[in-house]
Length: 208
Ligand code: DC
Image (cartoon, rainbow, N blue to C red; front, side, top):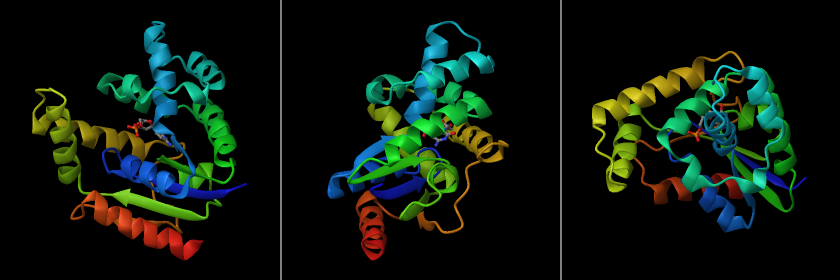
């Protein structure tokens, strides 16, 4: 088992960017666990399988190859919505958590980001961060990103969408999004990515 860094937080909190940078800094492996839920959702959508078919979703989850996760393809909005629906299914979570734990054991270390890394996937992680920001700040960032990519979606719709996603992720019965008791809280509402990175780095250095 290498050094394990668990990073959790709601959609558009900046946890993914932070996780990638931290992994790059230490030469650790990085897994965006949201992509594993997205890949299962995409496979269902592509094969015309209903999103409430738990048995089919669990089969897809058990057969998932973590090496083939393509961020560009999986980042589509509709796939994110579908992912948050299949993420409530316990057999899907069990299969994906097992694969995520195998990934976390890789040497010399691994950074995993998601919703339940510090609470369920890696409860013994060496460092746990819970990255958050107000819904308005997250919606503003997400909206700017989407505009830069050519989308015409309005800010109000983006905000409403994020709130729906938060509610689904925080209120599900199995592994809801919440900070682990021993997680460091990093509120980036008034921080840019550089400041968030410096703060995270100091916390990790203290644990090493
Ligand atoms: O972070 P993201 O938007 O790529 O995640 C997509 C969905 O996957 C999210 O709405 C909830 C789910 N998810 C999860 O339940 N547990 C994780 N560790 C990561 C993502």
